[in-house]
Length: 309
Image (cartoon, rainbow, N blue to C red; front, side, top):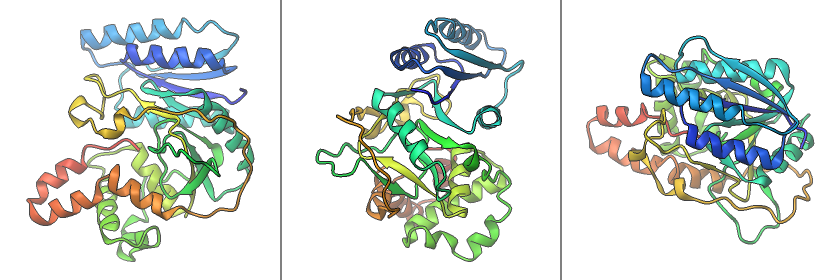
């Protein structure tokens, strides 16, 4: 394992400890750690200190690069700045948060995919989550329009395409650009609502703008045919994934690949998977129906709470 890792932490010592223990099993040689600090709330400051103490327990041969903030910033700014900081120093790497727990296969899968598709600019990232565990596997991965961010790997060349201002969104929306992604009315309407919110800056989520940036460039992601990482952050300290939003996929366990013999293959999108993700994870069908039958303010409120990709 040689790939550098970016780990973003905050006020979740229990989940941070689990992630550090998993890293101890892999022993990556270089870890960048971005630490946001809480506002002046005693219980959060105490948890943040515990997280810092856990970071100090890293005891294998490893170069640690720390970025500790002097004052609290919002989740979007903290994430964006950490990503930019990491890729200012590295050309490629693995991205983890303090509540994303990968299995061992995740690291080796990401490392191999980063190498194999390093020069293929059609590929934006390597996903760790897939929400599926295929029993019979001919291929270990496929290609998707979705950039799922519960632990992933990417390149500096991809991050350069992050389009924070989204200045082309009104034009793309007017010309029905999203129909080129998936020809489904419910899909288009759902993501138009999301991107409208992001463009208006009423709420900002890095993963949604990242998704938009890749769709704008007609870029795709690599999806493993095993679920390689689990979000363990559905706790009261979570920024977006509170306990009350818990869903079936939060309890989905990961599975290891029995072997990681992987080869490059021709790029063919798995549209059936994208439609499945749209329906089962983002619930676009359900939201579409509700939007047609209820006050839009309720749906708008629902969209303001991001489903972490």
